[in-house]
Length: 190
Image 1 (tube, rainbow, N blue to C red):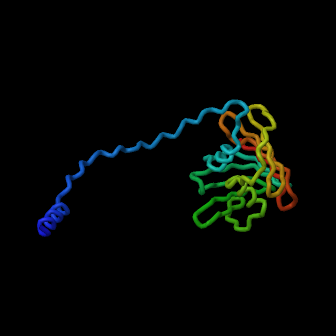
Image 2 (image 1 turned 30 degrees about the vertical axis):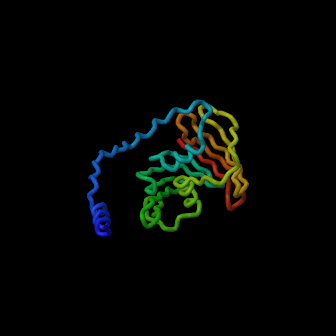
Image 3 (image 1 turned 90 degrees about the horizontal axis):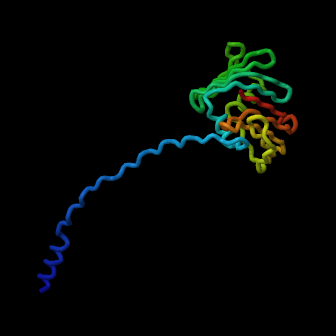
């Protein structure tokens, strides 16, 4: 009897299970990016404006940092491959980011001794710092732009920002400054 039970158990253990029928797996289509809806008047979105500045393929700018004013252009093949050209204090500066860092030229010739203001301009235009901030307050609308204000919680500077409502592009930024370490900044992007 034990042999019969053993053989039955062995047969049960060794029996072949019916092969699973291969069922086609549905392939998920990658969703097409949503078409951005145009913002209505007064709905300029600051966070989208920051993303735009950090990712835009290019733009013209005017910037004042402390007592230095400059006008120039940013071009960006890809994020991380920015080229900034600007004129300040009677000289033309160009900075281009490479894998090994940023290379500078002054008046068309390589120059590794760029002044501090040139570095600040480069950082504002390519990285566009977005500080820890108080809640945004909508101050109003000016032309086709929404004017928002916040306080930089790190430095207590007031930031006034104008964002074009139609496409959430940053149009203008103005900071109050916080001493010599953080001079007042004003940027106009065209």
